[in-house]
Amino acid sequence: MTSEKKESIWTRPFALLCLAEFLGYAQHFILQPTFPLYITQLGGSPFHVGLVIASFGVASVMSRPLLGYWADRWSVTGVMILGLLLQTLSISLCFVPFIAALMFANGLRGIGWSGMNTGGYTLLATSAPAARRGEASGYYGGVQSSATILFPAVALWLIESPFGGFGATFLFAMSLVLLGAGAAIALSRAVPSAPRKSTADSSEPWWREILNVFDRNILLAATLMVTLHVSLPCFSSFVVLYARELAIAHFGWYFVTTGITSMLARPLLGRLSDKIGAGRSLIAAYILESIALLMMPFAGNLAGVMIGGALYFMGSAIGGTRVLALAMEKAPAERRGRAMASFSVAFPLSNGAGAMLSGLAVDLAGYDWMYITAAVPCLAGLVLTAKYWASLK
View 1 (tube, rainbow, N blue to C red):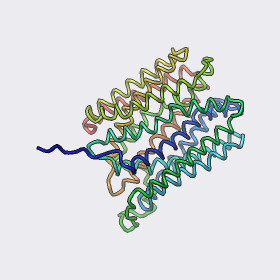
View 2: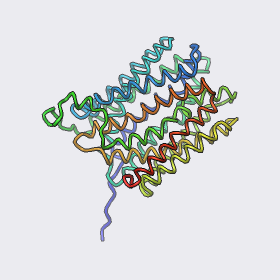
View 3: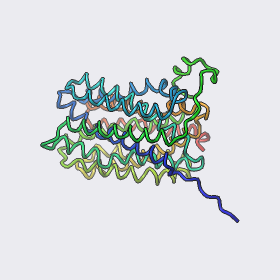
View 4: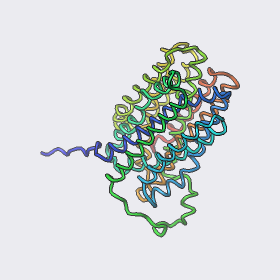
Protein backbone atom coordinates (compact mmCIF):
# COMPACT_ATOMS: atom_id res chain seq x y z
CA MET A 1 0.00 0.00 0.00
CA THR A 2 1.51 3.34 -1.07
CA SER A 3 1.02 6.56 0.81
CA GLU A 4 0.39 9.73 -1.19
CA LYS A 5 3.20 12.21 -0.78
CA LYS A 6 2.20 15.71 0.24
CA GLU A 7 2.75 18.43 -2.33
CA SER A 8 5.61 20.67 -1.20
CA ILE A 9 4.83 24.24 -0.16
CA TRP A 10 8.42 25.50 0.08
CA THR A 11 9.37 25.71 -3.59
CA ARG A 12 11.91 28.25 -4.87
CA PRO A 13 9.20 30.63 -6.19
CA PHE A 14 7.33 30.44 -2.87
CA ALA A 15 10.56 31.20 -0.95
CA LEU A 16 11.32 34.21 -3.20
CA LEU A 17 7.73 35.40 -2.84
CA CYS A 18 8.05 35.22 0.95
CA LEU A 19 11.40 37.07 0.85
CA ALA A 20 9.98 39.91 -1.26
CA GLU A 21 6.94 40.19 1.03
CA PHE A 22 9.12 40.10 4.15
CA LEU A 23 11.22 43.03 2.94
CA GLY A 24 8.14 44.98 1.84
CA TYR A 25 6.46 44.43 5.20
CA ALA A 26 9.71 45.25 7.04
CA GLN A 27 9.60 48.70 5.42
CA HIS A 28 5.95 49.04 6.48
CA PHE A 29 6.65 48.09 10.10
CA ILE A 30 9.60 50.49 10.22
CA LEU A 31 7.20 53.30 9.35
CA GLN A 32 4.28 52.24 11.57
CA PRO A 33 5.72 53.63 14.83
CA THR A 34 7.70 56.33 13.00
CA PHE A 35 4.80 58.26 11.46
CA PRO A 36 2.90 58.97 14.72
CA LEU A 37 6.07 60.26 16.40
CA TYR A 38 7.15 62.28 13.34
CA ILE A 39 3.71 63.86 12.89
CA THR A 40 3.41 64.87 16.55
CA GLN A 41 6.93 66.35 16.40
CA LEU A 42 5.77 68.45 13.45
CA GLY A 43 2.94 69.76 15.64
CA GLY A 44 0.19 67.40 14.55
CA SER A 45 -2.50 65.86 16.77
CA PRO A 46 -3.65 62.21 16.98
CA PHE A 47 -6.35 63.12 14.45
CA HIS A 48 -3.64 64.25 12.01
CA VAL A 49 -1.93 60.90 12.60
CA GLY A 50 -5.20 59.23 11.62
CA LEU A 51 -5.45 61.33 8.45
CA VAL A 52 -1.93 60.45 7.30
CA ILE A 53 -2.50 56.73 7.95
CA ALA A 54 -5.92 56.90 6.27
CA SER A 55 -4.41 58.43 3.10
CA PHE A 56 -2.45 55.18 2.73
CA GLY A 57 -5.66 53.14 2.93
CA VAL A 58 -7.74 55.36 0.62
CA ALA A 59 -5.12 55.41 -2.16
CA SER A 60 -4.55 51.67 -1.81
CA VAL A 61 -8.27 50.90 -2.11
CA MET A 62 -8.79 53.19 -5.10
CA SER A 63 -5.87 51.69 -7.03
CA ARG A 64 -6.84 48.01 -6.53
CA PRO A 65 -9.23 47.65 -9.50
CA LEU A 66 -6.67 48.92 -12.02
CA LEU A 67 -3.84 46.86 -10.50
CA GLY A 68 -6.00 43.73 -10.40
CA TYR A 69 -6.85 44.27 -14.06
CA TRP A 70 -3.16 44.66 -14.92
CA ALA A 71 -2.30 41.50 -12.97
CA ASP A 72 -4.78 39.52 -15.08
CA ARG A 73 -4.04 41.17 -18.42
CA TRP A 74 -0.34 42.00 -18.19
CA SER A 75 1.88 40.42 -15.49
CA VAL A 76 1.36 39.44 -11.86
CA THR A 77 5.06 39.72 -11.01
CA GLY A 78 5.30 42.98 -12.99
CA VAL A 79 2.58 44.55 -10.85
CA MET A 80 4.38 43.37 -7.71
CA ILE A 81 7.75 44.83 -8.83
CA LEU A 82 6.21 48.18 -9.76
CA GLY A 83 4.48 48.30 -6.38
CA LEU A 84 7.75 47.81 -4.50
CA LEU A 85 9.57 50.44 -6.59
CA LEU A 86 6.76 52.95 -6.09
CA GLN A 87 6.98 52.48 -2.32
CA THR A 88 10.70 53.26 -2.51
CA LEU A 89 9.97 56.50 -4.35
CA SER A 90 7.18 57.52 -1.98
CA ILE A 91 9.34 57.26 1.15
CA SER A 92 11.79 59.79 -0.34
CA LEU A 93 8.97 62.39 -0.11
CA CYS A 94 8.79 61.92 3.66
CA PHE A 95 11.87 64.14 3.98
CA VAL A 96 9.62 67.15 3.25
CA PRO A 97 8.69 68.25 6.82
CA PHE A 98 5.01 69.09 6.30
CA ILE A 99 1.96 67.04 7.28
CA ALA A 100 0.33 67.63 3.86
CA ALA A 101 3.46 66.24 2.15
CA LEU A 102 3.33 63.20 4.43
CA MET A 103 -0.29 62.59 3.46
CA PHE A 104 0.66 62.67 -0.23
CA ALA A 105 3.70 60.45 0.33
CA ASN A 106 1.74 57.90 2.34
CA GLY A 107 -1.03 57.89 -0.27
CA LEU A 108 1.55 57.16 -2.98
CA ARG A 109 3.00 54.44 -0.75
CA GLY A 110 -0.52 52.98 -0.49
CA ILE A 111 -0.66 52.57 -4.27
CA GLY A 112 2.69 50.78 -4.19
CA TRP A 113 1.48 48.62 -1.30
CA SER A 114 -1.56 47.72 -3.38
CA GLY A 115 0.63 46.52 -6.26
CA MET A 116 2.88 44.50 -3.96
CA ASN A 117 -0.02 42.72 -2.28
CA THR A 118 -2.13 42.22 -5.41
CA GLY A 119 0.80 40.40 -6.99
CA GLY A 120 1.68 38.53 -3.79
CA TYR A 121 -1.82 37.26 -3.01
CA THR A 122 -2.40 36.22 -6.63
CA LEU A 123 0.86 34.24 -6.74
CA LEU A 124 0.00 32.62 -3.41
CA ALA A 125 -3.46 31.62 -4.65
CA THR A 126 -1.89 30.14 -7.78
CA SER A 127 0.85 28.14 -6.05
CA ALA A 128 -0.70 26.95 -2.76
CA PRO A 129 -1.78 23.25 -2.69
CA ALA A 130 -5.58 23.08 -2.45
CA ALA A 131 -5.64 20.83 0.64
CA ARG A 132 -3.08 22.97 2.52
CA ARG A 133 -4.26 26.51 1.83
CA GLY A 134 -4.59 27.34 5.52
CA GLU A 135 -1.05 26.11 6.18
CA ALA A 136 0.37 27.95 3.14
CA SER A 137 -1.37 31.20 4.06
CA GLY A 138 -0.12 30.69 7.62
CA TYR A 139 3.50 30.49 6.45
CA TYR A 140 2.94 33.44 4.11
CA GLY A 141 1.37 35.55 6.85
CA GLY A 142 3.98 34.39 9.34
CA VAL A 143 6.80 35.61 7.12
CA GLN A 144 5.04 38.97 6.69
CA SER A 145 4.37 39.41 10.40
CA SER A 146 7.86 38.24 11.41
CA ALA A 147 9.02 41.69 10.34
CA THR A 148 7.31 43.07 13.44
CA ILE A 149 9.77 41.27 15.73
CA LEU A 150 12.68 43.68 15.27
CA PHE A 151 11.87 46.42 12.76
CA PRO A 152 9.51 48.61 14.83
CA ALA A 153 11.98 48.37 17.73
CA VAL A 154 14.85 49.20 15.34
CA ALA A 155 12.86 52.24 14.14
CA LEU A 156 12.44 53.51 17.72
CA TRP A 157 16.15 52.92 18.38
CA LEU A 158 17.17 54.75 15.18
CA ILE A 159 14.94 57.72 15.97
CA GLU A 160 16.41 58.12 19.47
CA SER A 161 20.05 57.37 18.64
CA PRO A 162 22.56 60.27 18.41
CA PHE A 163 23.59 59.36 14.83
CA GLY A 164 20.07 58.52 13.72
CA GLY A 165 16.81 60.46 13.69
CA PHE A 166 13.82 60.38 11.37
CA GLY A 167 15.96 60.85 8.23
CA ALA A 168 18.03 57.73 8.96
CA THR A 169 14.84 55.78 9.62
CA PHE A 170 13.37 56.78 6.26
CA LEU A 171 16.59 55.84 4.45
CA PHE A 172 16.61 52.43 6.12
CA ALA A 173 12.99 51.82 5.10
CA MET A 174 13.82 52.77 1.49
CA SER A 175 16.74 50.32 1.36
CA LEU A 176 14.57 47.45 2.63
CA VAL A 177 11.80 47.88 0.07
CA LEU A 178 14.35 48.33 -2.74
CA LEU A 179 15.87 44.96 -1.80
CA GLY A 180 12.34 43.56 -1.91
CA ALA A 181 12.04 44.75 -5.50
CA GLY A 182 15.24 42.84 -6.30
CA ALA A 183 13.76 39.66 -4.81
CA ALA A 184 10.58 40.19 -6.87
CA ILE A 185 12.66 40.51 -10.06
CA ALA A 186 14.33 37.17 -9.23
CA LEU A 187 10.86 35.73 -8.60
CA SER A 188 9.68 36.88 -12.04
CA ARG A 189 12.43 34.73 -13.59
CA ALA A 190 11.50 31.69 -11.48
CA VAL A 191 7.76 31.81 -12.22
CA PRO A 192 6.57 30.55 -15.63
CA SER A 193 5.08 33.38 -17.69
CA ALA A 194 1.31 33.05 -17.87
CA PRO A 195 -0.29 33.65 -21.27
CA ARG A 196 -1.52 37.21 -21.54
CA LYS A 197 -5.27 37.63 -21.74
CA SER A 198 -6.71 40.00 -24.27
CA THR A 199 -9.88 41.99 -23.77
CA ALA A 200 -11.53 39.67 -26.29
CA ASP A 201 -11.26 36.84 -23.73
CA SER A 202 -13.75 38.62 -21.47
CA SER A 203 -17.49 39.16 -21.85
CA GLU A 204 -17.10 42.58 -20.18
CA PRO A 205 -15.63 45.76 -21.71
CA TRP A 206 -12.16 46.58 -20.37
CA TRP A 207 -13.37 49.76 -18.61
CA ARG A 208 -16.11 47.84 -16.78
CA GLU A 209 -13.60 45.25 -15.62
CA ILE A 210 -11.51 48.02 -14.07
CA LEU A 211 -14.47 49.83 -12.49
CA ASN A 212 -15.86 46.61 -11.06
CA VAL A 213 -14.05 46.96 -7.73
CA PHE A 214 -15.36 43.93 -5.89
CA ASP A 215 -15.50 40.34 -7.05
CA ARG A 216 -18.65 38.94 -5.42
CA ASN A 217 -17.04 35.56 -4.87
CA ILE A 218 -14.71 36.88 -2.17
CA LEU A 219 -16.95 39.63 -0.74
CA LEU A 220 -17.67 37.64 2.44
CA ALA A 221 -13.96 36.95 3.02
CA ALA A 222 -13.11 40.63 2.47
CA THR A 223 -15.84 41.79 4.87
CA LEU A 224 -14.64 39.40 7.56
CA MET A 225 -11.07 40.65 7.08
CA VAL A 226 -12.26 44.23 7.63
CA THR A 227 -13.96 43.34 10.92
CA LEU A 228 -10.83 41.49 12.03
CA HIS A 229 -8.37 44.29 11.29
CA VAL A 230 -10.21 47.61 11.70
CA SER A 231 -8.90 47.73 15.28
CA LEU A 232 -5.29 46.99 14.22
CA PRO A 233 -4.09 50.66 14.31
CA CYS A 234 -4.79 50.63 18.06
CA PHE A 235 -2.04 48.04 18.49
CA SER A 236 0.34 49.01 15.67
CA SER A 237 0.45 52.83 15.49
CA PHE A 238 -1.46 54.54 18.30
CA VAL A 239 0.00 52.20 20.90
CA VAL A 240 3.27 54.18 20.66
CA LEU A 241 1.48 57.38 21.69
CA TYR A 242 -0.44 55.49 24.39
CA ALA A 243 2.84 54.19 25.83
CA ARG A 244 4.23 57.73 25.83
CA GLU A 245 1.17 58.92 27.79
CA LEU A 246 1.73 56.11 30.32
CA ALA A 247 5.46 57.00 30.47
CA ILE A 248 6.48 53.42 29.60
CA ALA A 249 10.21 53.07 28.96
CA HIS A 250 11.95 50.55 26.63
CA PHE A 251 8.77 50.18 24.59
CA GLY A 252 10.58 48.44 21.74
CA TRP A 253 10.13 45.18 23.67
CA TYR A 254 6.39 45.40 22.99
CA PHE A 255 7.02 45.03 19.25
CA VAL A 256 9.48 42.19 19.80
CA THR A 257 6.90 40.28 21.89
CA THR A 258 3.97 40.83 19.54
CA GLY A 259 6.15 40.09 16.50
CA ILE A 260 7.30 36.74 17.88
CA THR A 261 3.71 35.91 18.84
CA SER A 262 2.40 36.71 15.37
CA MET A 263 5.24 34.94 13.55
CA LEU A 264 4.81 31.70 15.51
CA ALA A 265 1.02 31.84 15.70
CA ARG A 266 0.29 32.22 11.98
CA PRO A 267 1.80 28.95 10.69
CA LEU A 268 0.76 26.96 13.78
CA LEU A 269 -2.77 28.33 13.97
CA GLY A 270 -3.03 28.22 10.16
CA ARG A 271 -2.60 24.44 10.31
CA LEU A 272 -5.11 24.29 13.16
CA SER A 273 -7.62 26.32 11.15
CA ASP A 274 -7.46 23.72 8.34
CA LYS A 275 -8.62 21.14 10.88
CA ILE A 276 -11.30 23.02 12.85
CA GLY A 277 -12.73 25.02 9.94
CA ALA A 278 -13.39 28.69 9.28
CA GLY A 279 -16.34 29.20 11.62
CA ARG A 280 -14.64 27.98 14.79
CA SER A 281 -11.39 29.75 13.82
CA LEU A 282 -13.20 33.08 13.47
CA ILE A 283 -15.05 32.72 16.77
CA ALA A 284 -11.71 32.14 18.53
CA ALA A 285 -10.20 35.13 16.68
CA TYR A 286 -12.94 37.59 17.63
CA ILE A 287 -12.97 36.47 21.26
CA LEU A 288 -9.19 36.87 21.61
CA GLU A 289 -9.24 40.31 19.96
CA SER A 290 -12.14 41.46 22.15
CA ILE A 291 -10.37 40.39 25.35
CA ALA A 292 -7.21 42.21 24.27
CA LEU A 293 -9.02 45.43 23.40
CA LEU A 294 -11.04 45.53 26.63
CA MET A 295 -8.02 44.87 28.85
CA MET A 296 -5.84 47.63 27.32
CA PRO A 297 -7.44 50.51 29.33
CA PHE A 298 -6.38 48.66 32.51
CA ALA A 299 -2.81 47.97 31.32
CA GLY A 300 -0.75 50.54 33.16
CA ASN A 301 2.72 49.14 32.49
CA LEU A 302 4.83 47.46 29.82
CA ALA A 303 3.88 43.91 30.88
CA GLY A 304 0.16 44.64 30.66
CA VAL A 305 0.45 46.26 27.22
CA MET A 306 2.58 43.33 25.99
CA ILE A 307 0.00 40.77 27.17
CA GLY A 308 -2.81 42.68 25.47
CA GLY A 309 -0.83 42.93 22.25
CA ALA A 310 0.08 39.23 22.28
CA LEU A 311 -3.58 38.20 22.74
CA TYR A 312 -4.68 40.52 19.94
CA PHE A 313 -2.12 39.23 17.45
CA MET A 314 -2.98 35.62 18.29
CA GLY A 315 -6.58 36.37 17.37
CA SER A 316 -5.49 38.20 14.24
CA ALA A 317 -3.27 35.24 13.29
CA ILE A 318 -5.90 32.50 13.42
CA GLY A 319 -8.60 34.69 11.88
CA GLY A 320 -6.46 36.22 9.17
CA THR A 321 -4.97 32.95 7.91
CA ARG A 322 -8.37 31.27 7.72
CA VAL A 323 -10.01 34.19 5.92
CA LEU A 324 -7.13 34.33 3.40
CA ALA A 325 -7.59 30.60 2.75
CA LEU A 326 -11.33 31.21 2.27
CA ALA A 327 -10.60 33.92 -0.31
CA MET A 328 -8.24 31.60 -2.21
CA GLU A 329 -10.93 28.91 -2.29
CA LYS A 330 -13.55 31.32 -3.65
CA ALA A 331 -11.39 33.17 -6.22
CA PRO A 332 -12.31 32.09 -9.80
CA ALA A 333 -9.27 30.86 -11.73
CA GLU A 334 -10.07 32.91 -14.84
CA ARG A 335 -9.97 36.24 -12.95
CA ARG A 336 -7.87 35.38 -9.93
CA GLY A 337 -5.89 38.64 -10.14
CA ARG A 338 -9.01 40.80 -9.87
CA ALA A 339 -10.51 38.58 -7.17
CA MET A 340 -7.41 38.67 -4.97
CA ALA A 341 -7.03 42.40 -5.62
CA SER A 342 -10.60 42.80 -4.38
CA PHE A 343 -9.79 40.77 -1.29
CA SER A 344 -6.58 42.66 -0.62
CA VAL A 345 -8.63 45.88 -0.45
CA ALA A 346 -9.78 44.71 2.98
CA PHE A 347 -6.50 45.36 4.81
CA PRO A 348 -5.85 48.98 3.74
CA LEU A 349 -9.57 49.77 3.96
CA SER A 350 -9.74 48.51 7.54
CA ASN A 351 -6.40 50.12 8.38
CA GLY A 352 -7.44 53.52 6.99
CA ALA A 353 -10.91 53.52 8.52
CA GLY A 354 -9.55 52.20 11.82
CA ALA A 355 -6.86 54.90 11.92
CA MET A 356 -9.38 57.69 11.29
CA LEU A 357 -11.77 56.38 13.95
CA SER A 358 -8.96 55.75 16.43
CA GLY A 359 -7.51 59.24 16.01
CA LEU A 360 -10.95 60.81 16.37
CA ALA A 361 -11.71 58.73 19.48
CA VAL A 362 -8.43 59.79 21.11
CA ASP A 363 -9.09 63.48 20.40
CA LEU A 364 -12.66 63.28 21.73
CA ALA A 365 -12.43 60.82 24.63
CA GLY A 366 -8.87 59.56 25.15
CA TYR A 367 -7.01 56.31 24.62
CA ASP A 368 -9.15 54.21 26.99
CA TRP A 369 -12.29 54.81 24.92
CA MET A 370 -10.36 54.25 21.71
CA TYR A 371 -9.73 50.65 22.77
CA ILE A 372 -13.27 50.11 24.10
CA THR A 373 -15.01 51.36 20.93
CA ALA A 374 -12.60 49.35 18.75
CA ALA A 375 -14.09 46.17 20.24
CA VAL A 376 -17.46 46.83 18.54
CA PRO A 377 -16.38 45.48 15.09
CA CYS A 378 -15.50 42.16 16.78
CA LEU A 379 -19.17 41.83 17.76
CA ALA A 380 -20.16 42.57 14.15
CA GLY A 381 -17.74 39.86 13.01
CA LEU A 382 -19.29 37.32 15.37
CA VAL A 383 -22.74 38.14 13.96
CA LEU A 384 -21.45 37.69 10.38
CA THR A 385 -19.82 34.39 11.30
CA ALA A 386 -23.07 33.08 12.78
CA LYS A 387 -25.14 34.30 9.81
CA TYR A 388 -22.90 32.66 7.18
CA TRP A 389 -21.91 29.60 9.22
CA ALA A 390 -23.06 27.18 6.51
CA SER A 391 -20.99 28.98 3.85
CA LEU A 392 -17.90 28.85 6.04
CA LYS A 393 -17.93 25.07 6.52
